[in-house]
Image 1: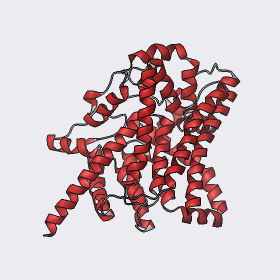
Image 2: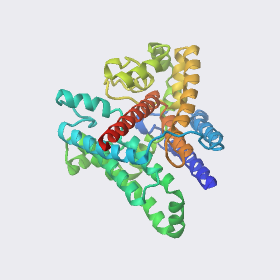
Image 3: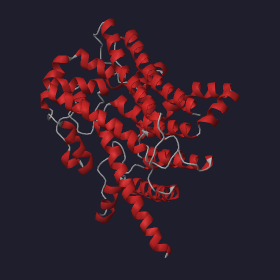
Image 4: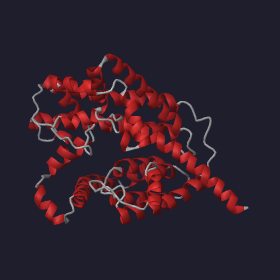
Length: 400
């Protein structure tokens, strides 16, 4: 089993490297970037693009090495939390999140700021900091029957669609496969042709999901939105989808436009990750005026506070260096501490395959490079422990 788990994590790391390679090929063929910067002309030569490909893929190598280190040791200590309590809190939170999303529009992407009664707003502020997907991840790696774990997955994906997002449609299936990896491998070997058909159909399925999501965000019906898009299959797959799962183009834009990023970086606070942490914990009133993801989108002249583009870990380091060497050193140390902390936290959960769970979570965080994803996960963990302890206390009182 340990060998199978290691192969799975290695395959996922290589998958993200493949996304970089596909983005590299796309840029070579079309002479323009993909992903966030789709249609922006590329002026880098072949050697510079190879350099970008190499640098953007390095973080996945170090992540795999970090995973191998932790996988040598079984977790010595786990949280004294019953998985049944987590399930019960998940059910209550799911009902609440779905209700406030439908009734008040809470959490909907590209939606106006919601308006709810004062007491409800206070509850929403707390519960919004514990994503339903956070609890779902834990339950997917529990010992509950397969049908129950699939139910947790379905409810979470439904809540994601209600919020006009597809954010969990990539991560959660990876976690589900991890929780049932032996059975999944057995199924693929036994029904290889079915697995091939699913893989071939997946771009069409994903394209349909994106169309539905974008139509909902723009308050249009599907037919009207499709008429405006006019995107070919290969343009969607390699230009949009692969581009969103790769930081290649984002890093290439930084390399191609050093003057802009050198000029923009001094606007950063020397310890800007601290500002981002305050923003995550205390809310939008503490949103910093400048941070790397904002610099990335400002390059296109978009001043909106609601839009940001990832820099990727290498891009984050370059922008930090443009600010100052002290900022770069601080970012490297803090990023290293946060990566180790994610492993330490995940190893506390009462779940199976905690090391692999941490590796998958970090895979998503490192490819985007954003500090806010680290701080959000840590905040969710702290609130998760507090809420579970309170729920445990209340159930003990009710049973007396």
